Image 1 (tube, rainbow, N blue to C red):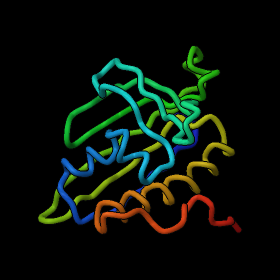
Image 2: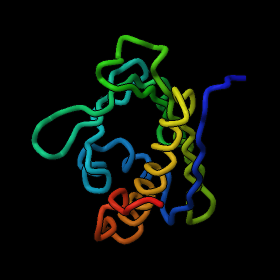
Image 3: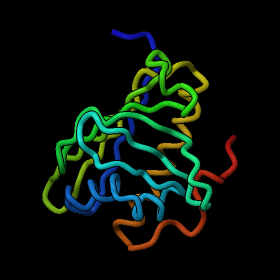
Image 4: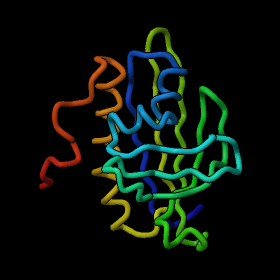
Amino acid sequence: MSDQPSYVYVTYIESTPETVWDALTDADLTAAYWGHSNVSDWEPGSRWEHLRTDGSQVADVVGTVLVAERPTRLVTTWSAPGDEERPDRHSRVAFDIRPHGDIVRLTVTHEELNDEGELADVSRGWPAVLSNLKSLIETGSPLPQDPWQVPGD
């Protein structure tokens, strides 16, 4: 058992597993609700990048696809570009997608965080991103304002 912090978030979406998978892996869809495009061929062992959508093509996060079992499970490593060659600085994110009738349970597990500061960041970030994903899938539009811009307490 690791003593590194981890974070788990669960949401329920009126959708199919395939639509949720596409929302996590399609560069245009991620750009619509995340403010970044997730870019990869999504094959195990492949690199992935979390690219800004401001035209700069700057990657704020990079990593490796560890598991890609469309449409039920995606696992990737996450690191800052400057830490890409330092596996001790990588965290891991698992997206587990489970259908139940007309809904999907999406569980995001972010593990092996480096410290409590990263835990605080993802604890604010994942609910905002996943709320926007849920809105996009269920209504066809992301939320009218970027939820990660809401001031914290």
